[in-house]
Image 1 (cartoon, rainbow, N blue to C red):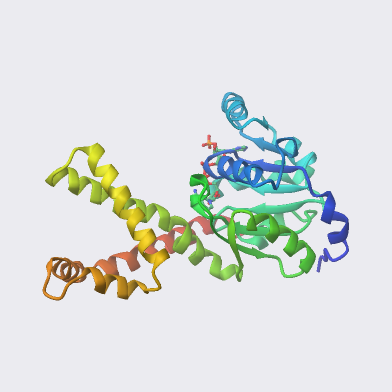
Image 2 (spheres, rainbow, N blue to C red; image 1 turned 30 degrees about the vertical axis):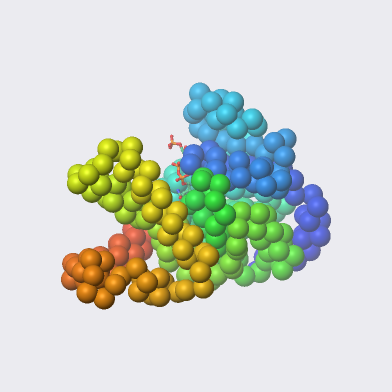
Length: 286
Ligand SMILES: NC(=O)c1ccc[n+]([C@@H]2O[C@H](COP(=O)([O-])OP(=O)(O)OC[C@H]3O[C@@H](n4cnc5c(N)ncnc54)[C@H](OP(=O)(O)O)[C@@H]3O)[C@@H](O)[C@H]2O)c1
């Protein structure tokens, strides 16, 4: 068994340069958020994008170096954030292997990619973590990050990694088997809630308002919803009860929602999303 116990002290203050491999939605949002939260300075960060033109555009907009070579980024960094899509990872694993070493910490944010698979492919790598960040990091909103890692990693290194993610909100260490549910429950769910807002907007346009007004009102609704729960001590059911007068309009609407199988539909969303993670994982079997 590999042990990282002795490396933690050495790594503690030296971990500075961080590589964000794959400057797409999450790579950009995370690197930007870490810089804004003071975890890294722009000089301590390097990003990669395989397209030189896009790399240059991102570099102009975020103000730090973006290069096309993942191996070069790894070579000059100690903390490696793997931010490309899961399906793209097998294609770059040889590039990663070429420069990875026991001095580097790998933090994969790729949904469904097992730690064991990464370890088998990257035998010389230092500690390997899987973090599921809040998708809303791109909206600069504090959220929840779920962290899992290989068993043998020392508490000091775990703390070190956790402290970085704490800059973006709450953090929870979970078992690896729970990560799929975390990804769906508090990661992809932001998109499902957005879909609810989109449908609500469409209905407003269909029945009454301009698109602009519908959009504005939906934002008021979501904002009001957030404040109602944040600023009262009521639980969700109590809030619902306060809004839905017995025999009234909202109660009738809620009854229809139940009859239409809303809860079942949402559970099916979770089930299908979990199945999709399994499908993605099937390419990481060997
Ligand atoms: N989106 C979320 O809310 C969220 C939340 C939690 C975790 N995640 C995980 O985060 C990862 C990234 O998701 P995302 O939504 O940010 O995807 P994305 O926007 O597609 O970002 C991935 C980026 O990596 C680029 N890329 C592909 N191959 C590369 C290579 N060899 N070298 C450097 N860059 C390369 C892609 O370019 P091309 O588009 O040209 O291929 C793309 O710009 C995924 O593994 C996902 O599971 C996402």
